[in-house]
Length: 116
Image (tube, rainbow, N blue to C red; front, side):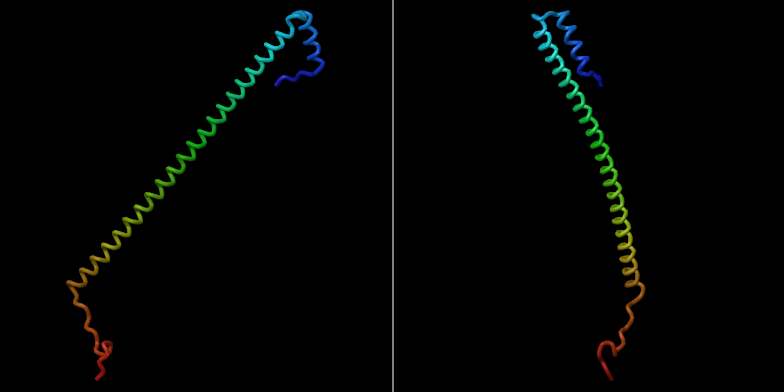
């Protein structure tokens, strides 16, 4: 983000030594170091929160996709079950209708094993 060369840091250190003085410079440097550490931890925390939120959104999208796919599969299975039940009812009706209106054909004696 900031591109600071070593020579620039030396100039900043010399100006700070002149302005602040040699007695207060170590205390100011320590305080600046602590503040810099806090800023780094805060930035890392914000990055972590943003990444976690992105992952959460991705997981919600995946969950919704799975929910839609399972609903499609459920609907397809219900349709198959309905079609199967309808076919079974038609077969039962044709069998029941065939038994009441048409008697079964007589079996020829040669099929039964009677030979004359």
